[in-house]
Amino acid sequence: MKYWIPCELHTHTTHSDGRQSLMELAEKAKKEEIRCIALTDHNTISGNSDKYNVMKQTGVHIISGLEWTTFYGHMVILGVKRYEDWRNIEIDNIDASIEKIHDHGAIVGIAHPFRIGSPLCTGCYWEYKVKDWNNIDYIEVMSSDVLKDKSSNMRTLDFWTDLLNQGFRPTAVYGRDWHSGGNAEKNVAVTYLGIDTLNGDFDSAVLNAIANGAAVVTSGPLLLMECKLKNVNKIYTIGETIQLEKSDGCIDIDVSIDFTVRKDQWRLGENMTLSIVSNKGEIARVPVDVNRPNFSFDVLHTGIKWIRAELYGFIDEQQLLIALTNPIYFKM
Ligand SMILES: [Zn+2]
Ligand SMILES: [Zn+2]
Image (cartoon, rainbow, N blue to C red; front, side):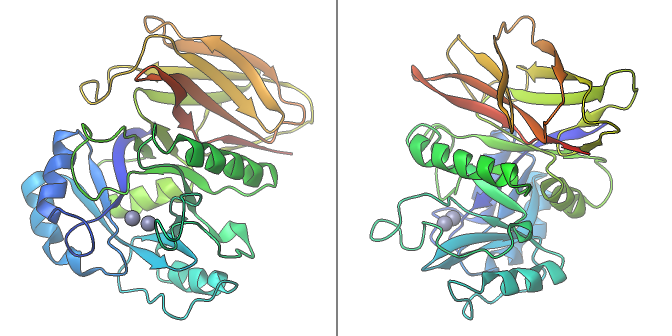
């Protein structure tokens, strides 16, 4: 059993170009029922000096991070224990730097890869030539304002899907790139992370959840998915891999949508659609009745390498992807 906790993984304070102190940021997060934030100021970790005091006073957990802000792209690093220097990287050697970061126990993610770059936002567009995509722990598949940034987010979704189809498993997360204000000023999402315990080492639990794909992105309800092989009792959850004994057979897919979580923080239109997507395309599409939010599908797993759930709905009468699970993977 996992505890699904709402997190915001990309934030800024006055230690870089944010217009909020760490205390103000954590207080706003608390008001928005966010349990954990990652502090990712541009090229600095100086904001961490107040971290333990802020965590104690607000109860919001803070993960130490930073955002490498360079001409060729922005890369977020979470779980930093020391300053990670960005000044030696070139457009074609970022893998070596990432390996060093992993050696220090931190993880890396690509921030807003398709946001418009220079001159609007220098380096915001990702241009680094990644040699091995296994080095990338996560990608901000949704970022910033989910309505205004819909087209660049959809481009990232296609890009991520392509990586999944090639056999890579970067985890999809949301990054608000939170510089100021609250959720009334932006159409925001959160990332729910599935952690095994609420009592142990919280930093490790959060980093493991991201690294292992136990993550759900949503601008509304919590979308969860489980899979089970026919006649086998083991249940697999988001991010896990099902080892198949034979190439053809049936799986049960169970999807649930929890409309009670953080329900004061979001407002959606009435019509919603649930879609089950795999490397072979869409498997199922059904309308969602909020009073009956549990769904079961019987599917042939022949040729399937990954499956994820997507929830479509309306914000301000515009249709868009509201929620997205990371995949459950299949291996022969
Ligand atoms: Zn950035
Ligand atoms: Zn940022």
